[in-house]
Image: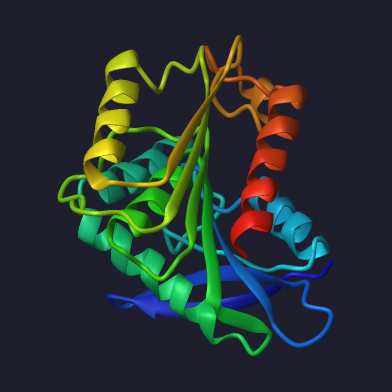
Length: 234
């Protein structure tokens, strides 16, 4: 499945995302794919392709405007977004608008999925009442960006984490649950026992980060949980 680069601007910053069009006839649901803290990688592009192969129009958004960043620079970009929820929302909304405007995308059937930082992005779109039917997060952090939106959440929420994830302490998990209850959300939290952070990323083990490791079983189960939710709502 080919990916097509699309450029767009937010606050005079040029962003470049990648679209995979899996529509076979007429229009298809659109899936916004938000990347991990390192930015758009082959892992994220592969996920967009996998979604397109199932018949979706998938767009891997760009939250940084830069690619192939050294880890320290990628962390700077990630921290900047976490310190400014309004900036996070503007960049994510611009990508969602681009996806919705694609001629094969059914703008009434949009969903957002994200990995790591991208899970925070997807959840923030739900908090901001963006026109998405669900927000899905794979090994997301639950720390809220500064200035995060509050109030009712209409989109369905599915978050999936590992029990051994060092990025998600017990207090953050508890805060997420309380937030979902207060927002009246239709939410799910799946916790995979013995699983760490970045469990969907086959390349993560080579980096040697403590508590970060790929888990084929959790990856497969989480992906199927997402697909089941998509079947239900789009």
